[in-house]
Length: 456
Image: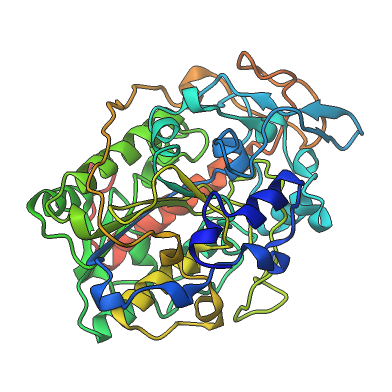
């Protein structure tokens, strides 16, 4: 299959989807692109790659409505631990404070995966996990996804939570299966770029994930305000990693990274702000912008992930569930769905291809190159703009809403309207993950990162 045939309109791919084919990623050979058609990287028209990684949403949950994509939202049902079936439902809350943060741990993901049946959602969670959003709920993605290239076979790199997946985005491997706080020495794409003399920066909002490497990347870690200044002046580096306000998760309900229980409208506003900065930058003509998520966040998805080459076979080689991913560029095909199999290391593969870098591990060496979804040829500089504002919300604790009780019980919880029956979930999970970012920030301050303590 040619590179262009993996895009929407590739007859064999769309025919398989219409027939209901849901092959694991490791078996979906018909969906794999062919990088042999890529142009010479130095004359490809790409000088800047901007990568934005959000938090904790699955493809069916957030983009299952997208025409031409392998998505489904309404009409599904899943059984809880007592055997009661609950239908998937349209969420009318933009926060979900009444429910627990769905389980997206190493073990919880495997419960949801259930040997590939992908039906264990209510064995690990309450019914928040089988809720979904539609286009009209999403002021940015509801407009941008139909316009740009969306990948509907882009999987989290490993069946586990935030830190392991973000480590794959940086280094094509993980040295942990949980958000355990210990400093890491995993080699990263920033090391490869530095050795090759290629410009690079990591832009953070409040807590730098780069601090997980101690002070190693302090010099290339800059504030989000610096990103906007660099974009406006046309001084973006060759590779930019950009992140939302991860530390805001500490106040449950206030984050702008999509992590429950942050209001999704604030995640939408953040993406729109980055999009506007990049598409109006003097560097836009030679830029590829990737919006992706770290992992599925415990939200339902029908497509079983498969395994991939890994530094720890049998431990971290099982990919996580699908995550929303958009590719935005003057070289991107418009109004297109790409059906090739990708994960975070496909972004690394694109960076390595463009700048002549060696792979970091067997994972990125074997990954499909995300550049395969680009159309190349004459760039199309048109980029529609949308007005997406952030909203003022209260923390969940102030609202007096919190999920509680035993996962999979099917018991009604203190409710937000429009959700149907709300089962109770693991109330402590959101609190624990929120504290992980607080711990990283505290440790960064201790070793010399110039971060202000809250109230300081």
